[in-house]
Figure 1 (tube, rainbow, N blue to C red):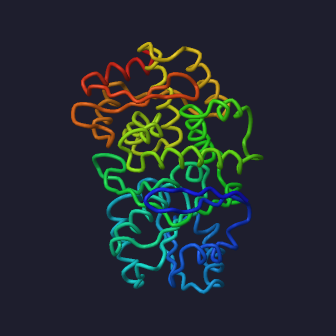
Figure 2 (cartoon, helix red, strand yellow):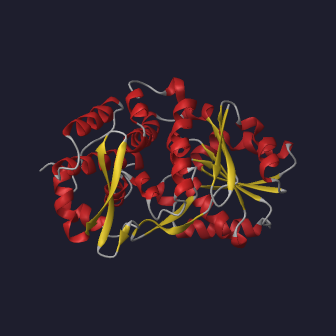
Figure 3 (cartoon, one colour):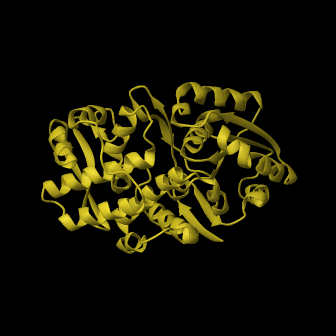
Length: 351
């Protein structure tokens, strides 16, 4: 078992190990206290793990309640958010009680945002059950829901009180969902750690604790420097500007990890075209995406992608910040005028 201490507006531990779920109640009580624990999860994860978590919580003295919603990005909306907040009020949770996100990025974002808003802030614990959530979205305090105009446009920064990552739970992931997480692992190698990138030479299932630990370390250090994403934290968005546009245009039928993989390809190919990145960096990325069975291309046009990018929260007036790889293990931020976006994306599409 490994522990990473995160220092931000709230200090908390990220605990990574095997067979944590059945002891979660004890660990949560020690870290966060409270009397009532509200589990927020989707219908897929509910069937797999919620009963065991409730039993652990009740053994540790909590009254546990559960809010279950349909799985998928389509549930991350304002209606579901208000329904969840009303559920917390109906169950009479106090500010010292706990909301627990059990699941992937959607339960984490939805539960975290509800915890941030209900009674102006209630204690929050994240228990990721996907690789993507374990290495990325469960740490750092980003919470949000989607609006019709774009992804994650209604939200806030709200750090958890504890993150419990039981890698044993990842064994139940369908291959496609696991690959989504691999895209984020590749991202961390591209932006900050060439050694991590080069170590991804084969399946990572046998060394998940080490891989998750390293990714969380990188995110911990980045968040400590720039918690509210005014500068260097934007590097974590490599592949996400174009990736979010692809998700929106596809009606979220293309998963987040697949969209980010395509986004990284487009942004790296564009960097090569602008003379900011060597061609061998692009080749290395493409080879790694192939190795992990991740997509690299999209049928959406540069014009369509540019239009979808205009609603991205990384836009600042007439400029949008893109993450540009210089070499494997190092990326930089570049402000692009909005009226140049289509041409840059066209470079990235390679046609």
